[in-house]
Length: 98
Image (cartoon, rainbow, N blue to C red):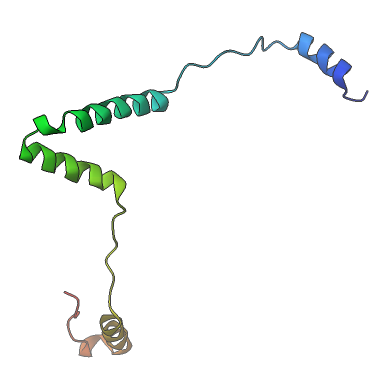
């Protein structure tokens, strides 16, 4: 039996799932609304904050806005580490990066 609009309608009537339920806003959506309200309030009332509170707020928010940088080793250090790895264990100098 091919699946066409008529057979789909019959199958839908036999379905035990029931009608589609309207979903409530998820926790994530609720949190986003809350954050928006709080940030709007902070922007409007930022003059009422002390300098210390402003700095703490700035530092906290910047952790979420700006990506964190990774430490990078320069070519000189990488070459030195390669040289050390090539030497026998007994003749190795201490790690230049420490």
